Length: 78
Image 1 (cartoon, rainbow, N blue to C red):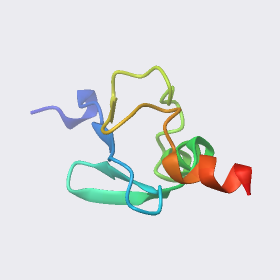
Image 2: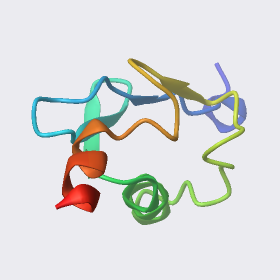
Image 3: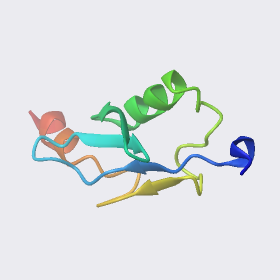
């Protein structure tokens, strides 16, 4: 098995009650994001910064896409 050709499978999970979304690669939690920029930074820190966050097939968005951050809209109005 050649692990060099393996592509990471990143999951941005459904928003939690506070609007944050967990970002994982397999069984490993890479970080907690509360905005799309956080996802970009989390992937950069995991040496996955070449992944196109909004368009990549390597990222599975659960419970909404890259524009869905329910905790954000509440704070913008305040």
